Image (tube, rainbow, N blue to C red; front, side):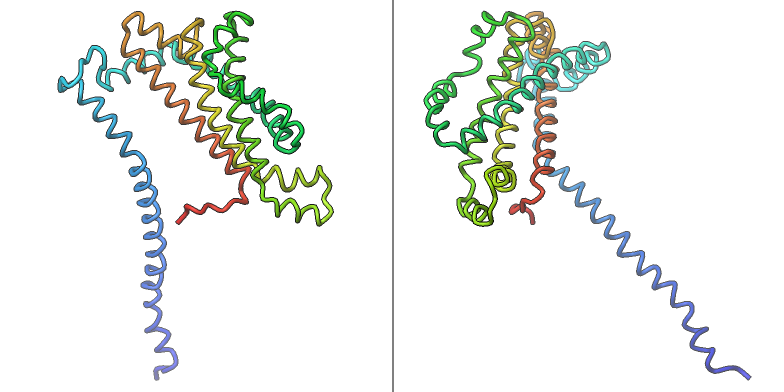
Length: 290
């Protein structure tokens, strides 16, 4: 005799295979969808750069521009690789980054505390406002001869010039960040018994962080641009010196190699500062998401 109770079990057992395949299907499909989504975002953000690269490569070859003054991108990349392989590019990048990061770091260490004090204490702001208005409207490169005369042609004058140029966006944005804190937050914190130090630590500084980092990002761009201009005047190493030297010797491909390197460094520095801002602003809600 056959046990009837065993029949459903024996007949139902093979049905487990489709269930496993059905469970694996959505997981694989979800992974593929995420990869396609990431690839689509990368492609979307790279379209403009790829179009520029294609125009740069094609215009000289089609005779639309003189390839003596604007070589194709492929030739520039070959020259860039030769500079990298010979060690010249690393030397110039190292010299520029040392000066730029030193000036930017000193600007952050000095301008943020001063901006916090000016933004928080009204008497200090009223005392220093006329002086700030005078110097904020004086271009950094206009003071380059002054820095050179006082500090010489060495590293000190270049770092000091970067420090001066980077201090203003950080200082002004820090002041604006402190003054832009919601007064209701301040009154609520005071009503809970917070002293001045705790109020500054728990309310003022966190609320001002986004605006401060906006100034730091602007300063990061200024630190490269101002330094390159300074290196064109008096330097024996650096990306500005490389560009100027290549121009005088009519090494046009090397000149564009230096320009591309500056753009790449600026992009990397900006992305690092954006990541750092997100690290210190994890409480913020991204209203542009979705």
